[in-house]
Image (cartoon, rainbow, N blue to C red; front, side, top):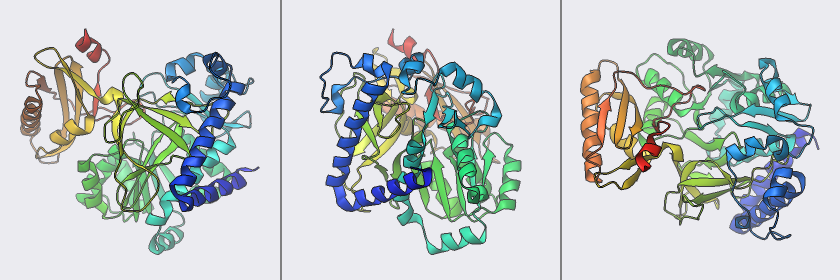
Amino acid sequence: MGIVREFAAKAIDARLALREGEHGITRRAMERQLAMVAWARSGSPFYRRLYRGLPADITTLQDVPPVTKPALMAEFDDWVTDGAVLRDDLRTWLADPATIGQMFRGKYLAYTTSGTTGEPAVLLEDEASLAAAYASRVRMVPGFLSGELIREYLRRRGAVATLLATGGPYGGIAMVEWAWRINPALRGMRVYSVNDPLPDLVAALNAQQPVVLAGYTSALELLADEAVAGRLRITPLAVGTLAEGYSPHGKALLERAWGVPIVDTYACSEMPVMAIGCVHGRLHHQVDWVTLEPVDHAYRPVPDGEASYTVLVTNHFNRVQPIVRYDLGDSITVDPAPCPCGSPLPVIRVEGRSRDLLLLRDAGGAMVRILPLAISSVAEEAAGVHRVQLVQTGPSAVLIRLEAERGADHALVGADIERRLGGYLTRIGLGNVRLQVSPDPPVLSGSGKFRGVYREIGAVEMATV
């Protein structure tokens, strides 16, 4: 089946599942996750060894052990189900920038993760998996697709602007390049590098006048500030966030800048679309396309309403590189309340990467876990702050990097953030934590992504000894 027919079939199924409701979605999820376990066991030497000794017929996903990125990458050649695919060959191929968006051996789209959470993973997708990734997006269309947007899209000749990391063979740019190759009509979509100077980005966007604007949240927030200041003069009819999620402060900034729906997605390189946003601003877990298991430190399930330590991901469609109970490192919360939009898909909240959780030691030596959104929202309440980055540098030490708004005094803003964070930490029993305001601005990762809250390597190890 060609890619277009694969896409059409999966898009139809995605809509049909919603009409069938919770029963149809749950049935598909169970069938697909167990089929993936059976496929991984039969086609991947790595999983075959891992599942040795387990019952011949697995009846629930929880019967198989979790896997981690380091373990899979160490056994890459045995992980993939195509014996002709070797990691060294892939790395050599990906080292050539001309291969971005092309199909490795004519079969697989290959790319790497950004490496913000350790060693970059080398990933593959076949056409069926790619079709599923794009078809899953049809569920977000009805609530956001208006007649005005369609008319403007056609009038502006498909003018879409996407801000991505372009310094390597990352998943986002690889998928865009691939889409351009199979459908030249998508050439109206322009990609801008998040590492380009801000004035250059503003000038290029003013010239393009995109009808849809998408990108990493941190990059969009910078552009929103330019729009509020009157330097960025564009009128997008939809704005889409990618990869990072956003805080209430960030969402309010985007809405103030453009006054249009914010289309949110929860995605990663290992599973391009795990949850999609609705018009009520909720994220809906695509249960029939991907399994997300919120778990604690010991991989035990956590109840609805409780933030997980990490989440295990099972991709229902990628058969060349099976991802079954993969420790993604995100902290998520399942919201037990139904969404006003009426979708049968459950609602989740993404709290951030588990590596972005701060594990601080109190005066008595006990460890206290702080969610990134909890502490960043306190810092963002300070007057005059444009962007703030909180870095755990030791067992009871946090470094504050900030960028003040134009005209605001850096020292005064820093003092206000320090005062607010100090009060918050004292209220939760962490008055002993040392806060330090850095004279340096926030830094980006190598792929251009912004991490607002994170732990330096070794900070937690120091805290737990």
